[in-house]
Length: 274
Length: 272
Image (cartoon, rainbow over the protein chains, first blue to last red):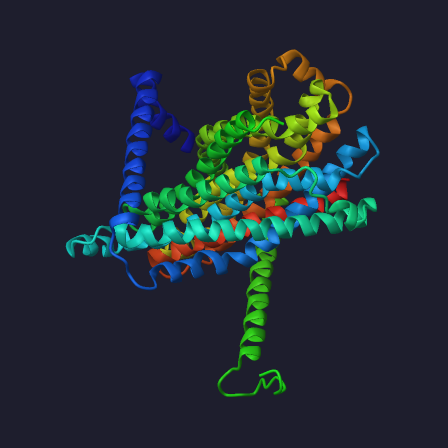
């Protein structure tokens, strides 16, 4: 029965042709991108010119930062252990020499992994939270009430989250790198017998790595609230709509992080040659 | 406060007892979640042997979960492959063996990053969506309506979704492994000027075996089980209207991500 229903659903699309479907998708994608860009520009505008609500940024910093700290600690601790274990196995296959394990790991962590994996975790936790909160406000018409009071929801809802997220993403990712490196050091000692003194090796870190990592922190911290705030504001329908908005926020902010990571890593690879 | 012994029977909780209370509350909530997921797994398994599930519902879910998440998996996999090459190149160049870039990127992609990122994306797309759907059904009392009609909600709704998520993640991991290697080959041609032939030679040159691919695939099944359980558990435990659905989805993605990372560690150690 359901297969028939699925076929019936598929039939109009087939009649319209693949081209129509592809075109429709492209137009949707373009419209979504333009709206997202609009939200981003308005956010930047209100960061400079907007009204300041006392304590809003601080309470968002608590919401985004402190409440994610435990989650980040757990996930980054485990990913640190996994990475060193897998990296050690990989090294063992080629050169049975673990002296550079810590240095290579620290370089990779600072240049990419701490920021990217930490931000993916933040995208799930923070992004879903922002979209669920703003989405519920849209569904219960609180956002319309804001508009009636001549307050732009971007100024009132997204800007505090934007500022808080940038600051707290940087802080949390520094913490994430520390946790992942410590967990990795313990694993290296237990599994491969690498002394902490050998593991803690700053030889391969240079300004290029630090700058790349910092640029990633800022970019991800800015992308998460803008993308998930946009998804939250474009909620429609009842409780199902809130669920959809939250799903889209998680998926789109994770995708944004992966795509930004590719471009920032590529640029850094070309700008800072080794 | 340091001088006074921790007074837990104070009417106004001091800093210490409040902290202990929060810690205990956190553990209780964690135990409740894990226990709820365990009970749900037991119920699901009881309906799996012998299979008592709604076949058409399984097909519908597999279409919705797998086919519809194709675009994000494609984008994620292609970019992931590129990123892996960019990150592996300096290490390989330091060893003076640029032909090894295929091995270095392939090892990380097949064993670790491919399954992990696919799981995170599918958790965001499918797991969260599934929670929202089940949560909406709970909030609008459709699950109670099923019970009134003497239809078992676990067999009718949860088991097809559980199987759907596990199968989807397994197949998507295979698919994204392939696409990630393709993306990596393109990136290594463009950025490092290692031609695809020697890139793939680095992968198949003997340092990587089927064991590495199987390692990633076993992980994907484990991730699928934990994602499906947390998604269905939080969906069925939704309460409180539209904000409740939002909270349930939030809880699902957080629990899935934490579960995926913890199990990734355990499985990596067990498989070696």
